[in-house]
Image (cartoon, rainbow, N blue to C red):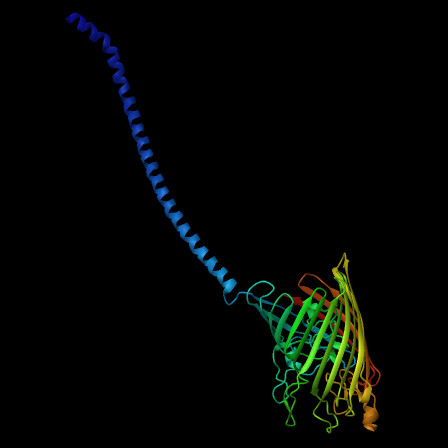
Length: 462
């Protein structure tokens, strides 16, 4: 028994020796396991912290998204129903450089204050703002449209105070329009004349100066109310009111003009490009009363027919005018005038300068009867308008004013246009004006039948 036990111990001795030798390796492995456990615990802690942080971040992001959504909803609500809903502002600036060769004058024109109306600079060199507010959406939404032109617009040339003096208003036009259905609208306000083919705004014209009929034949703004009707190719509009600056309800020698004017326009679109329009105007207007012995008011009648053909790269337009005004001629009789304007415009592409265009125009205005004059032409004490070339020859006026004929005016205009961008137009224009009498005053004080104007204009729309 003892021998057996001893033999067993002796046999197990190598295993015990091997276990003793392996003990340090086991301890090292245990240490590694403990280190790995600590690392795992650290990773668990970090992961838990990451999850918590992500939850916090998600909650913060959710709150931020909710706040942004509320702001978007508020902006959307304001855009649809707030004070800025349906509000739009557009316009242009058009600084001008004009050189009048006969008068030997040249200058930059931009928002200059001047109440005299001159064909070479007036309604040019503007700051123009169009402010429109629509109430609701869709074609039946009513709206208010206001245009502002400080120192250069209709408010300067035709807006008068209660004494008939110019009040230099910055307001160019203002109207409220209420659609009744798909065909009818009613409107009221200070509304630009509907006469003629030519636009007033420089960013819509294809030359620099306006034609003679626009400047000296057509009525001005009408202050009143009216209605319009549209059906297919036809459109008709009419209004009652007072023409600003001519038939205003102001006191003239303690006599008031209480008769409103009637104006109308009928248009027919023969095709998608060709429009024929007829405009008419009847009023009891303030007379010229150059003799000092005629009535304060007299009947005024004006009508015109215009046609325009507008293609992608070509515009052709023509206009024919006739008008008369009691007691507004130089000799105290009836002023009569008639004329026409012809225009052709073409756009083309060039390799060097890109999009370009050219325009040619011819105007004719006969204002000879009874010494000339009409509600748009103001004659001086010498019987003429020396800047615009209307009225009579001063030499004839000095001999016998009653026997003089007024001017027959013409002009030939050529313009070159450049379109560097969609917003920018650059225009160059040469204009030669002709009068049948020596009605243009020159720089040296003499008079002439001719005058020339060279102009350059930049029009930037926004």
